[in-house]
Every structure is written in C-alpha cells, then in structure tokens.
Image 1 (tube, rainbow, N blue to C red):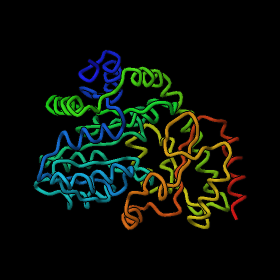
Image 2 (cartoon, rainbow, N blue to C red; image 1 turned 60 degrees about the vertical axis):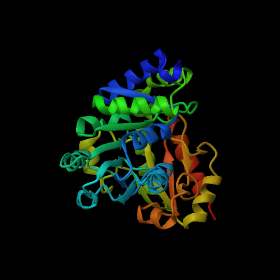
Image 3 (spheres, helix red, strand yellow; image 1 turned 90 degrees about the horizontal axis):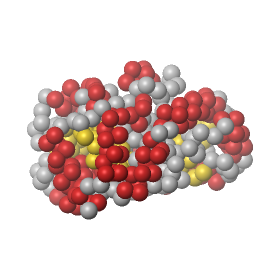
Image 4 (tube, helix red, strand yellow; image 1 turned 120 degrees about the vertical axis):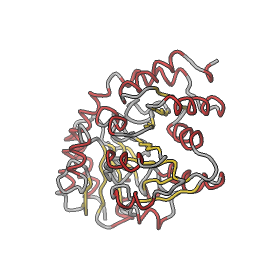
Length: 339
C-alpha cells in the first residue's frame, strides 16, 4: 500500500538523504507537500515561526497567511542579517525557515550563524536547499535540523515530474514527518520516484554545465547596456559572495537581473526570447525565465515583495545546459528589441 511505503520511493529517500548526509529522507508528492509536512507536522497552536523575508511565493503565503488559521504566528525577517534574526526569535519560536540562495533575489544566509542562534533555544532550523542542491551545499553539516527540496527542480532535472523531499538528522523529527505524510496523504507515487532517481544520476554533470553557463551569462548581462543590475553569487560585487564561496561548493545555476525600463520593459524582453522559455520552474536542462512579481510571487503583497528586494523589474533566469553562445545571442537579441 504505497501511501504507507514503497521500495522504489524508499530507494529515492535513501539516495537524497545520503547526498544531504542526513539520517532519513521522506518523499512527498510535491515540494509544497514537503514544506507543508514540516510546518504542520512539527508546529502546534501557539507556536511562532521566523522566516526569511525572501522565499518562494507559495511558501511565504502558507507561513504568513495559512498558518494563522491554526494559531501559529510568523515574523518575516532578513536572514542575511543575524542580528535581525536574533531580535525576531521569541521564547515560543519553534522554527526558523531559511532559503539560501533565496528565491528569487539570490540572497545568501549564513547557515552556521543561524544554527548558533537556534541552538540557544528550542528552535529548529529548516533550510530549503532547492536552489543549491546537495551537490553545492549541505545544510545539515552546517547545523540545520531539517532540509527540504522541491525535487521537481534540479534533483530531477528534466522538468517532467513533481516531487518533494524532507531530510532530517533526528529520529523523533523523522517519525513526525513520516506520520504526517502518511496520514494526510502527501506521499509520492513510485513512478515519480523512479523518474527522479534517473535524474539524480546526472546531477553533477548538469549542475557543472549549467553553473558554468550561469557565470558566463552573469558577466555578459552585467556589461549589457540594456541591463540595470545583475545578482549572481559568483560575482564579486554580490553582497554574499564571500559567504557563498565559503559555504557552498559552487555559485549555482540561478541569477536575476533588472531590464532598463522597469516592469513593462522586462515583460517585453521575456516575450521576445526564442530559445529561453518563459516558465516558473527551474533547475532543468533547459533555460527558463520568469517575472516573479507577476508569476511566482504574485500572491505576496506588493509592499512585502518590495521590502524583500523583489522589485517589479526583477527577472529570474534558471540557466540550463544549452550552448552558452546560443543563450547569449537569444538574450542579446531580445534585449535589443525592447522599445
């Protein structure tokens, strides 16, 4: 009875747990099912959550709006500033939720510093490691208690399946996550697991190629006359560059930038791309581009988006494994055609 367990799903859980150097993995139907299992499986009425002010849009909405219906409060804070995180922690804070690099601003959070803060109380440190993947970053080794992944993204890598994973290093937490997923039905189908296991085999090859492409494109865009700004952790001017260099084994495959002319210019630019596809996913072998303010983060109140650095002009690019010269030509032509 697959909701209670399945050998193919278990093989995937073991594989991802090994990559993250965790004690156990728990597969979920989607990335949001994995996040829901953590939030609702580990929190109770009266608990408090501190979360990064820059998160995947649906994660932000669940923490900021949905949890309140269950008597769980939340504070959003810039997790790149440990002093702000320390000030936000309360006696009833049970969970600190962090993305690093953050979606979509590529903000970098010091995970070891976050772990030191949470160890002082009864707070669990949960890290969404989807952007970095365990190939580039392993939060559990830096002090995190729980890691979550959208397996839909780079771990699968082929944009053809949905999936999520929770990896833990504690047996008691593991039992709570397993129980929640089984009782509430957010478990994974074995065919999903088989496809993702296939994708895992080429993770290193795909990330190496896409990461090299991302570095080239960040440099290209930074010098383009139609681009206002570029954020990529591999660029020395990125405020988290030194931290990323020490905390990660590479700078990743994601970047964001602003097109001169703001919101309308950014949309016009995306509409003129041919090779790069407009889509909200990321981490696949193909390059995908999207406008967070009107797509992934449309559900986040505008004032909260702007405070987190998600401006109306921000364009997020997930770099794939295509020939980098073709990607540059596509970007250059589309930028040149913007009115």
